[in-house]
Image 1 (cartoon, rainbow, N blue to C red):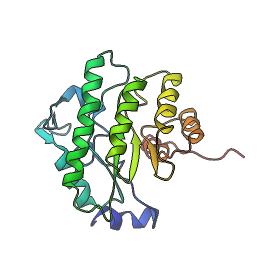
Image 2 (image 1 turned 90 degrees about the vertical axis):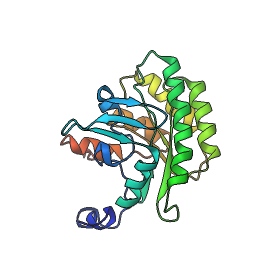
Image 3 (image 1 turned 180 degrees about the vertical axis):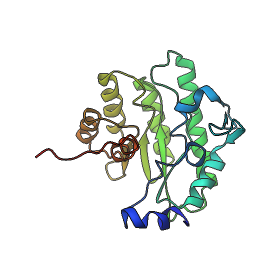
Image 4 (image 1 turned 120 degrees about the vertical axis):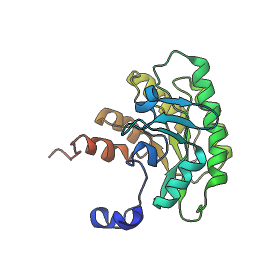
Length: 217
């Protein structure tokens, strides 16, 4: 099949490719939440048992970037430490936020093709708005080509979801692409559009569930 740019030609043509639908062990951390019961997160990376055969695996920031470099997508995502927004463990949320910043530094160092693959940072911090502001400032200081808001759609109330999106977007530069991760519903999408964001999840994740968005006429 070749790399991602070659294999996608037969179904999407020349559109830019975001690596947001790959398997959990061949991408960044988008499916990490679904594997947390099988995983252990340390500063080194994420150790987990393969959902296929139960064999132990380790995903580090460096390995995540190496995989994405080899796949060849136009947009690649950092490995981030993400936990459910409904977690009551404030200390763990802060640890995950700070670790995500450190992991971004490792991803930047490991990235082989910055001239042709755009690395997006991922803002974490749960539902704590001050923590989100702190993480946003740290991520912006790294000046990645694009910015994602992660760690949402984890069971939080819609009002809390919207507050996090608004808080983060108010701090983001206007001329860089933005991506809210995990948007799966029209109501979530409305909040995203209101803040002039994009979410490939609107076409990606629902597609895997056999759903499609269309204009009502």
